[in-house]
Length: 228
Ligand code: MN
Picture 1 (cartoon, rainbow, N blue to C red):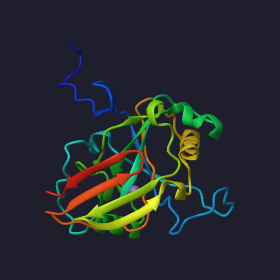
Picture 2 (picture 1 turned 90 degrees about the horizontal axis):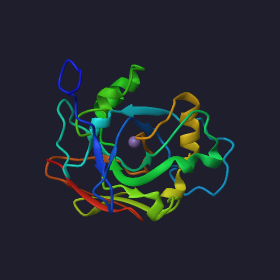
Picture 3 (picture 1 turned 45 degrees about the vertical axis):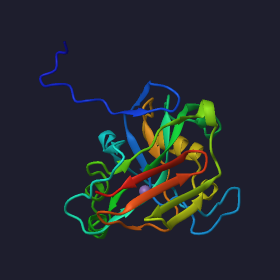
């Protein structure tokens, strides 16, 4: 028996490949614009701007296998992203040890009410109304880093109704996973259960009810998500 005044809200817990145990979610950070339009050369780019982040809610992560078209929008976009799940955290984490905090990786979608986000941007207001709505982040099964390592390259592809709409490669990320973790940890205390959506390659666009999204990231398998 808890001492809460109301019934305890459910913990969001995500499935993990190869086990019945689940991954409980604490926070969800999402990076904005993290892929160059074209393949970038490996190595440091001194001209890049600092990254920026917004948040979704833990219970926006959704494993139902479908995406309900949300209310109050007529321009809902797909954004395929690799999700990074942390097993530990801290503050001021050095880049060199940042990947030690990663539990695993999964396919995800940062679904966006682009029309509402656009209005908010224009007025300099926060993005939640465009980003953090119900079931706005379909997510696949988690692949533990202990099994698959830390993917830093691999094809990223999203199809709608069988047609390729987004394609890129994990190696095109402007801010690598270890850099995002390190950067976030300078501003927030990261912890086990935190999830980072690592940005989307070019080709975002609208979906309609009845469309079927197929997301695929090399090494993380694929996931089919109908829009209902
Ligand atoms: Mn995104």
